[in-house]
Length: 108
Ligand code: SF4
Image (tube, rainbow, N blue to C red; front, side, top):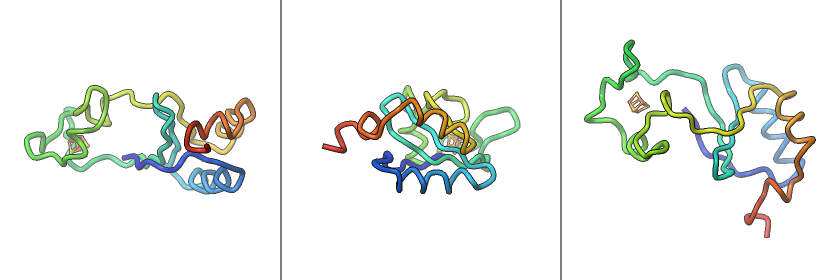
């Protein structure tokens, strides 16, 4: 599962994201719109052994709106353009980026 977080605006925000990455089975991801997420690699209890949703007709609204196209379960969709699961991967990516470029319109 993934929860949207604010895009980092400064070094303090980046430090918070490093803290997320210090936790086991947690990653930070960026989608095609440049939105940031913290993701927890824990399976949904409704995901069957066959890879199908066992509650499909009664799945939560979030599942219906999620993904591209909307309704694509997070376990089958390819939602993120960048995924960081270690401090090193985040810092390597960030060396080639700047805060204004990350922050986008939100920084203005
Ligand atoms: S559609 Fe939703 S409820 Fe069903 S398996 Fe995916 S995340 Fe779980």
